[in-house]
Length: 494
Image (cartoon, rainbow, N blue to C red; front, side):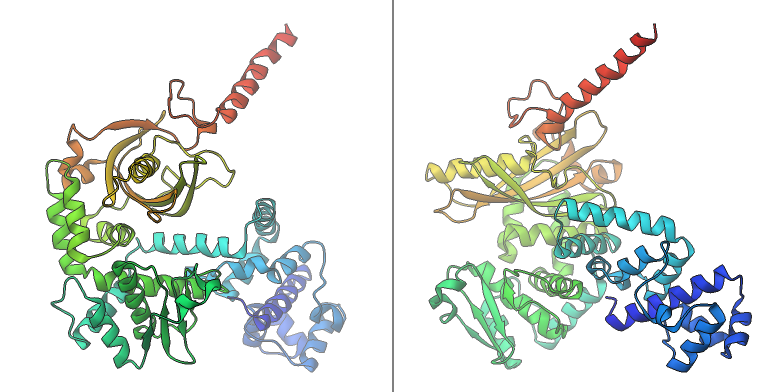
């Protein structure tokens, strides 16, 4: 994050560098004429130092401007957009330091190609305003990029989990029991309260809250055993990793900084890795993947063995598959759906190695109802309505993307949000089918797995015989209209 002091130094340095270059002065010449050292001038221009008043006066005189111009937020037409950018919320919505960019490197980028950089970032600002993207949306996108950059595998957290298990004698416990996790929190001086939060009506939408003042983890009513266990493990992650900039409630309603969102991710990663230890989980996944026929029961047994939710297991697979099986081309989706309103929303996504299909669409278009993510939600809703739902539904299909060579084997696990709700949720992992995947996962060739041609949204889909279509292909129709215009224009030249 770029602080207020960083912004002041960056803007001042940007002005000095721009004026020096306009006058054709070298570092040495500016330093000599202003009575400064070369290294000090360099530190000023890179935003590391902000000079005292007497030195600012000397610089202003040498550069031919007044004192107020150098210390103000006004500049010439070329620099003003960059200064506005440095002072904008947008620049602090992007966690530059996590991608290896310091304020000095940003300043160098801005000052060396100001017109191009300003035009590009101004475009992003306009897009964000047009689509009403919040700072949190940028944080979420940045976090996904950070996960992609690391193949969603974080060795330092895996090592921390191993150290934690050794310290608290949890090596042999699978599945880990809630009572043991609660006891470890007790050793850290943290109590667990399951009553008080449940009695406050305004807090019913939250699952938990951690009070730093009282060192109490409040858990709400209605949580399953696996949900409660994850919240205990996640809190242990916050404590053991000493993550102080963090959300205190679950589900987190807002993130005031990228570091807060990142630390929430780290604690959640720690919790999931604690419940599904790396070594044991790898061995069990190998047994599942080495089968030559698709077997949904093996996924059910994997969840049961570790006593975890479908989302926890699928998230853990996104850590393990790239690192230990070389399966890097994958996506993860979480979707919520309501059958009565035919509404489906993508609430979480992760793409590793490339931007895969499917992906979230911010234009309120209708997601392809041929996706296994949506089909499994519909099947669960039907079972709930018929009072026949018993356990999470596991589905598989090979999705062939229309008019492309991209084929994904997609595993989806769906369940109702609650037994009294019309809403259901599915979590899906899609793996790009290539020779490496076929070698690692031979059951991909099982003829019993349905192969379905899919698209991203109905509005962009040209499949003419789709029985699942939820909306007319408006985008395709518009493209065809424009194509007819282009074809007709030459007739005017005849």
